[in-house]
Every structure is written in C-alpha cells, then in structure tokens.
Length: 252
Ligand code: XBP
Ligand code: MG
Image (tube, rainbow, N blue to C red; front, side, top):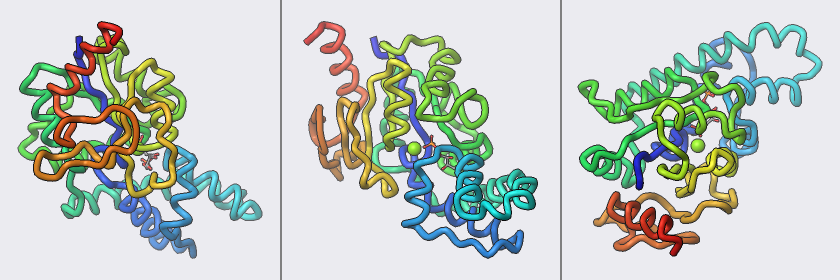
C-alpha cells in the first residue's frame, strides 16, 4: 500500500540551485572575498553535496595556501549565504516545479503522507515552503534535512530519517529526486525513485530511477519521458502512483 511520498528539495521541488549559487557569490562579496562561481563552475562543485562541505572543498582545492586564514571563516560565510538565500527566496523568485503542487495536493486529499528529505539547511527548506504554501498551510508531515542526517547524500541517512519520522516502511513509499547523489541515497534507503531531471543535473545519468522524467507534468503540459515507466497523459498522478505500487506488490 502506498503510504508516503518523499521529496528531495533542491532541483526537485523547485529549481533552487542557481539561487544557492547567487547567495554564495553575494556572501563572498559581503566578506570581501574575490570569488565568483559561474553556473558552469557551480555545476561541477555540486558533485559535493552540502553547502558547507561544498565551500570547504572549494577552498581546499582552489585556495589551499590560504586555508589557515580561511578555515575559521567558513562557518560565517555559509551562515551569511543561508541568510541571503532566504532573502532571495522571500523575494518571490522561486515557484515549484511543474506538477509538484498538484501531486502534493492529490496526496494530501488522498491520505498519503508527505515528507521532505534534503541535504539543504532547514532555514532554506522553510523559506521555500513558506513562499509556496502561504498562510502556514505547509502540507509536509515530516521535514528531514541538513545536518540532522549524520551523513549527507549519497548516503541514505536523510531518507532513512524521513522514513523513521513518518513511521513508514521503504516499501510503502516513493522518493522523488533530481541528482545522481540523491537517487543513490534514496535507493540505498530501500526506496523506489522517480527522477525529474533539473537544470543543474542535465548531464546526470538517472540510472536506478524506475521512471526518469523531464518533470512531474501537468495535464495541460505533459512531461517528457526520459526512461522507465511512462505515465498516462504525461503527468505523474496519485492514482498512477497507487496503480504502480499495486502492480509492484502483485509482482507484475
Ligand atoms: C542540495 C544540496 C544543498 C544545496 C545548498 O540538496 O546539496 O547543499 O545545494 O544548500 P538537496 P546548503 O538536492 O538534497 O535538496 O548550503 O544549505 O547545503
Ligand atoms: Mg536535489
């Protein structure tokens, strides 16, 4: 029986990564650091999950000589970046990806629980949800994110944490992801995965997802099937997910 849907945030709920990149660049400027991450450069840096870890990796690989003076400043840089990211999201420049609001509403109406499992920091999740589910009507029963998980994706920790908080077995849930690391994390937590490629994961192989799509689709704007299971009308619906789960349980 399908009891929960678990969504990644960055790249899956919304195309957030370029705002993260802008927030990093603005934080560097605030702290008089002459660093500017281009989109292409940031796409490579995204191989390291977690903004703090990504920033440390950048300094270690590009400013190793200044490590002794820079390392004590990393936490402040990331804190400023998180503040700035929240301001950018609050400026209302970020909507949910196609099909997300519709599927979330269907799940809520259909008694299927909803969770978030993200590497990003909690303030970032809350800022995005506040903007897109106004009046405090946030439909997610569980939010597992950031440093709450012992290890960042691709480790399964954050999806395992979401399942534990939901009180749901992996076989009763479906995960939604956009990246190689995210798919790996969900699979290793025992979850079936639907992948929706995002702008910063254009080059990612979405292997392991039982269905890989351009997005979740809307009846008026069908998605493109990239690989795996197709969805009637080019939109992932709760009815379609339940039917897939029933077939899966029947072994067909
Ligand atoms: C994406 C990430 C995060 C964000 C930046 O997380 O790896 O690190 O890029 O956010 P997910 P922070 O795809 O799992 O949502 O700076 O707060 O880490
Ligand atoms: Mg992601």
